Image 1 (cartoon, one colour):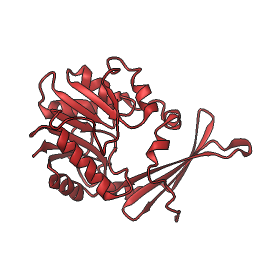
Image 2 (cartoon, one colour; image 1 turned 90 degrees about the vertical axis):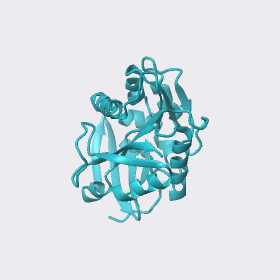
Image 3 (spheres, helix red, strand yellow; image 1 turned 180 degrees about the horizontal axis):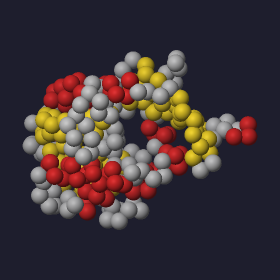
Length: 250
């Protein structure tokens, strides 16, 4: 399928708002618990360690990090998602609105970092992805454990569903997906009944292979030493839908 590359440069400013919350009102809480448990058990951080939840969204991981005894701080650019996060117990007061390309923290502030649910590769240029990695390294102390939860590019390409049409709470939702260059695109149309124009949103994520992402991390002071294929800690394989990279700062 051929589609124009019409996603706005900073599509995430529009998409991660009220429409996103309407489309995905209940993310998997058990999945979030497994993801945090994996990090907590493998990171070996003591109680009270400072952890940054980068792109924390509505706070489902952040809540569990704090419940596990970590002094976790969540940052996200989306004001609506941060408002949703504040409704969670023990989360209000540890949320910061910021762009991950310029984190408002001092050097070496955090003892660890998590980046869950493919919140990397959103930007128009690879240089902006590098800016994010440089900021991650800067705010982490030497030897700090990190976990990056990213998609498995080959799996996504192989199983890409060009179009799906659903109805959520009586509202039609049409999603169109395609790959162009090194990025995967999604166009989301919500509504459009009774002759009305649908609301249109976009997603765009850069597709890094596992080796390319490991190399990119290493070049910017983040050594990925372990790869998982799921939140249960299973090893990464060719048929894994996700790529979880865990390691420490150099």
